[in-house]
Image 1 (cartoon, rainbow, N blue to C red):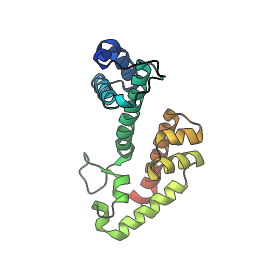
Image 2 (image 1 turned 30 degrees about the horizontal axis):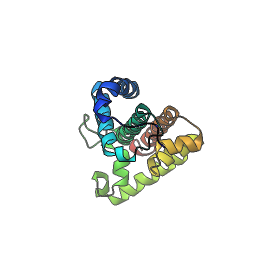
Image 3 (image 1 turned 60 degrees about the vertical axis):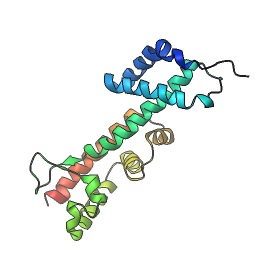
Image 4 (image 1 turned 135 degrees about the vertical axis):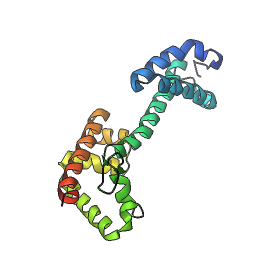
Length: 186
């Protein structure tokens, strides 16, 4: 029999500060942390019927908040990954840029107007990817190409999320340098 029961009427008074402090430690943004705590309370209300009472109420709410933080980073990192490969292309204003990963994957985009050029860029990118150090290649492929979650990659390779993002950043930097040499300056 379950020992713990939910009392949603007291959540804000009892747990809001604790949850906020946890969230701000993870996201370092006051507004985002507040939003995550609000989303946690809302998700807790929606899933209250699934609460079995095995964990303390605060522990259960923290588990929900942890998932909200992971979802937040998953969303922001999917955008971050594309932003890290921002480059200025010759035919654009210097203040503008295109996302390399989006353009190579989109044959109908600006680079797709010339399918031969797009195919050559894809081949140049593949050559540069193949030249990455093994661990960077593995992480880059799993995250960017295969779309595997950060948590799954970290578990499989025995690394932490910070290491993963450093490797992806280094891989993208190396790809940018390689493409600048092999493609854009050719």
